[in-house]
Picture 1: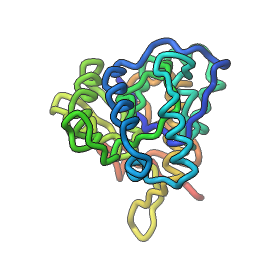
Picture 2: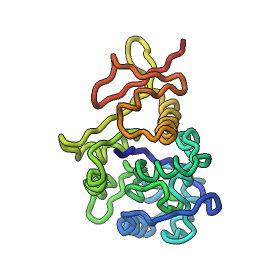
Picture 3: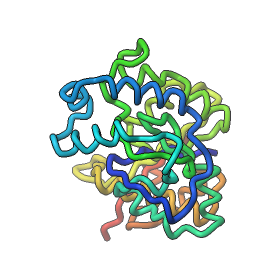
Length: 249
């Protein structure tokens, strides 16, 4: 079983807490992306990033100075987004860290797919970015099916905690012998399931923590998740979609 998770836009450098263990598997392709972006004008790369001047200038500086092999941070400690705050990997014990290293895979527009202790440096590149590179029209086309093939070689069961933007680079290539379980976190409003972005990110991080603490080995164990007032709803779920609804009562 493997868990897939989205990255976060906000990143930082942490050279002290825990050492990184490996370089990312797709570093050759990452170097191609870096080279392409470095050759672009400021206005061109700003349009790709879709950000304000302050962020654009910060990331241009990062792009020019980045070393993909030195002064690296373990991926799981590098991302600062809400789901990583709720996962709180900084307080995992050794067994929980070993669990996520084996089971968790972070999808990335820049690095492709990361193990938690792969060494990374701060970057900005979303999976849905319209960046032509190496004959591919965008980042989805650049990565193609290589991430999915690498993941399917490791397991035939995937727990999807990633956003659709990222999960589709895996799900679109799955075959019938791959079990792909997507977790949905929401509330019932006017008879429909409403998903709120921030709440979903919080719950995804909390779910990773739940799995690490319990050393979850199969998707069925996820049905016991009961944090942040979420409970599993069998009436809204099936074999490939697990729905957790907010219990506000």
